[in-house]
Image (cartoon, rainbow, N blue to C red):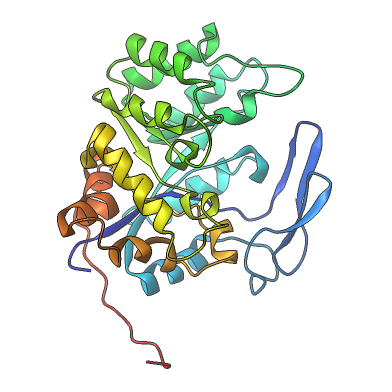
Length: 307
């Protein structure tokens, strides 16, 4: 690559120890996790101790020529704020880490205030987890809106994953109207492959909203590499909001159980459906501008022994 590549959606943890909808998620051995009553290969089996560390990710990033990454969070991984503060301090030029509050129960605003004081430049809300069969936390609730206004005032980025389709789009429109200067990155490419995914993409017609593609290879897993359907979805999103509003994300490490880290983006570089300029913007330049990465250098290609 002749330009720096930035991963806008990745995860790190030392150990999974979480509960979602009353079901446990816990690290086992050889990359497996107990996941809500089932056993899942959460990370590659060579990560035998279950530790999904910054150092292992940096090794993958260097090999795949990825200059920097945004580390987001999810309730299924447990709260990783303490570890991610350490990661941010140790590797400030490689990672931008999101703090996370537990918005599933009231009283999280003081925690958001503390995360901002600690130096987090972004806060993650896994909003799809706020809708269950038994309850719903509205994104427009008083406490949530107070947090968003606080984030807007302090120039904190909102990283958010939404429920399928348009379920939370109306709420997002209210948030954007109330906090027009709040920078928002919507994950999972709007849950592409789900009905009405385009409604999430259209939110990026607002000035401070971006869409990142974390998990797109998971969503097109049945199709598999080279994920031509995913590229066509990117093409459709370009028509809806413009290439400047779109960013690549891998959803590392879960997605590299099925494919290599490089494969999570090189299906884009190898495609003939996108121009070189569109590829450069999608894979790095848009994220550099949105998240404030600077002084990034392209990493050298290291030839494989099999080549």
